[in-house]
Length: 162
Image (cartoon, rainbow, N blue to C red; front, side):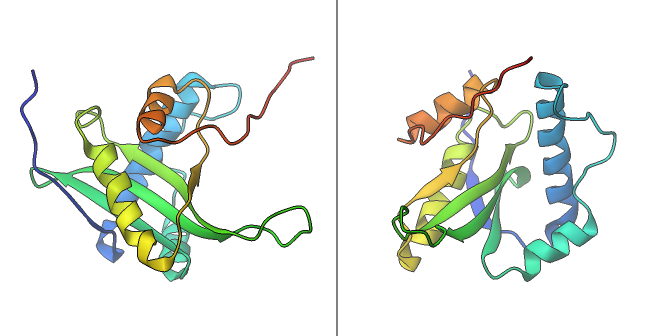
């Protein structure tokens, strides 16, 4: 049985470029291993300095960093979005989790839940009451985690090979 860790979550900042870069590289690798027909398994992170600078400059983006026992344990990269203006769509503002990555050794230990709870606390004062994300079908562990948080499927993208 694993011992309980002290998990804290903080707002990500300029000093977290390397951490974000490593998280995106790890996420890319997981996707590439499971869907090599779609994702390239890259030696280097696809997330560069320019991507990070755009994230930091965007007033509708932020990221959270989870630390467990003083070590980086995961990140949650969030974009605040507005539903498109269209007669068939109800106007709404929501938080979109663009990336969530829990580092190896910290998974299934409460880090993801701590990040999600911190995200909810961050957006609630803004009047935002909806969180959305995209999860790949191969990632059953992530789907189970999101369902345990009370999330439900919104739509499903199908694919076929011809």
